[in-house]
Figure (cartoon, rainbow, N blue to C red):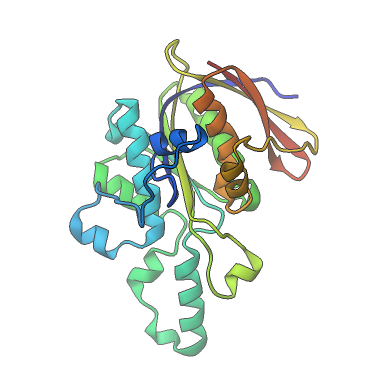
Length: 262
């Protein structure tokens, strides 16, 4: 087992249609049905960029803005880690169809939005952030891999960081090989652990362990419908506000053990 990495959670953001914010998810976990939403507001984007940007960008910047606002920190000062299992699968499907039928018709703008760090680029422009940014993609292990990368950077730098994990529902033939039934995103502002914030202790362990599922039935169903919804066990534990332990799969034979200190 590895040495523990300790980080504090300064802010949380969440978006899925039935729980479009962290307070909404907390209400849902408590048995209260919140007001649903049709699409992420992404108000941090200027109107022109908001019109041009796809759902994947709206989703990521919405939860990022929620988490940073909750943290009380300045967005322009925060390095970022953006994680996504498949990026914008809708645009990938569109580009594949265009390349197969009329390759000269590929839209440069759509191609720009197909890359994994498109959301990070929009976020940095909207906030004036010039800090370093990383993009993480690890299939079904994306949330755990991104969280581990973010925690390592916080411990190494001693500086707060914004971690965003997001994936949209897949469409077309891609849905057969990369099935995602739910659009879901979450964001955490992580920092060297202060006394007033929940503290996470993360350790890696060589084992094929059973993951910790959320207790709430709706959250447990979502957990299996989107790689980034693997965060729901952690989010549920943070919502309870009590010390707890949980496990996430970091790789087929590697486990991420998380201890939450309230």
